[in-house]
Length: 451
Ligand SMILES: Cc1cc2nc3c(=O)[nH]c(=O)nc-3n(C[C@H](O)[C@H](O)[C@H](O)COP(=O)(O)OP(=O)(O)OC[C@H]3O[C@@H](n4cnc5c(N)ncnc54)[C@H](O)[C@@H]3O)c2cc1C
Image 1 (cartoon, protein in one colour):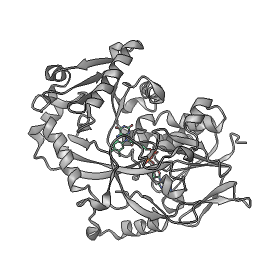
Image 2 (cartoon, protein in one colour; image 1 turned 90 degrees about the vertical axis):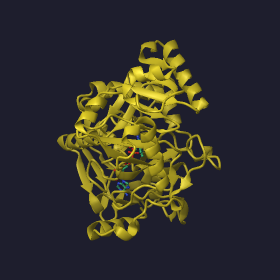
Image 3 (spheres, protein in one colour; image 1 turned 60 degrees about the vertical axis):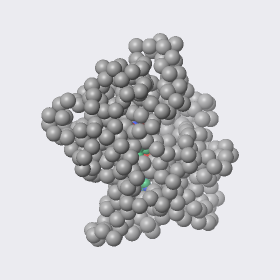
Image 4 (cartoon, helix red, strand yellow; image 1 turned 30 degrees about the vertical axis):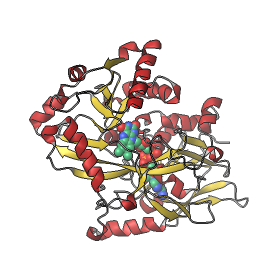
């Protein structure tokens, strides 16, 4: 039974789901919470350590619809998060992807039938699109259609993660970062079923009444999740705009296209991020997570933070350039910089894995982000704490339960073709150029921990 003075370790506590969990624990009065991570907030390994992330309220049905409105409300009203919300609206456009257009139409109709008609507009021509986003006037959007969503936009992700980290310190949450915060294994009791704490890669043993594992894409490599999550990476790059160009793009709606990619307005310094949309890449390697008595071949993340010379595959760069060329042909020749790979982990049914681990008493899992959990930063931790306190609804408990039995062979965690593997993609790995011995040493230690 957990009480307000129980010793609680949040592993991955400088990332998205982990820092949100620590925040909600501290806000509810838990007094002995410690976040543990390889990096201090904003964790350089976190998928959320990024200048911006999209947020939208277009989905009104199902769990993601419910969560979208709840988190939109939190970004608007929770004083910790309001400075980071940019409610500039969103275009969700398609051209050849008829299935996507049908789904967008359904979202439009659902918004109308549930009283949210003023939140959406259907854009059925280039002229309609340009009325909402004149910045596309040089682009090639003839024949495109889609949805405009008013209550949507982007959040300053890295800044928000930094603010949560500072708030955790203010609230008295303890921390351990670097090798003393890097999970190596669980400490089990004599019954082999009770989790008594965590052992980190430097050998420290951290006792705990409760351990929460929120290690994002690394989760399946650290603890045997029995194939419930598959980690994959996506990629992004940036271009530099002039102050005049920034002015023209300020406060403009974000643009997402399932067949192309997405972008948001540039930062005040003129940096604009572009992402291409695709099914992600795996990186198959052998690894032995805690709880497995044999090596398992699975997709193992390799982070930019520990491998700073890594960039992105050549085909990824071309795909990002295609987004720029289609929408902003005038920027087509700008150099792409800060090109990086970013890792998430998909559950096979698109829902979080937010549950007590039935194999180990005192271990809770908060992972399976499915590539769209940054926007949930203000609220996801509330559900983790509800779970711990026995307040989670039966429906949510069932949805986010431990569920290896549902995994069907060939499931890849989202619609579309099976992802390619990074090993087959030239251009991203520049190991021979790695020069910094401190980073190399750190990376070496992490390899030892099977990361
Ligand atoms: C290119 C790209 C664009 C995206 N765009 C959006 C978007 O527009 N909107 C949106 O909502 N979401 C977006 N996402 C998804 C979003 O970033 C993720 O869903 C979310 O950040 C994942 O949160 P997490 O807490 O599960 O993992 P993370 O935030 O990655 O945190 C995991 C943490 O675990 C730590 N860790 C790992 N191993 C260990 C260890 N051994 N010991 C201790 N700590 C460890 C890491 O250092 C890290 O801090 C995007 C993702 C990508 C890749």
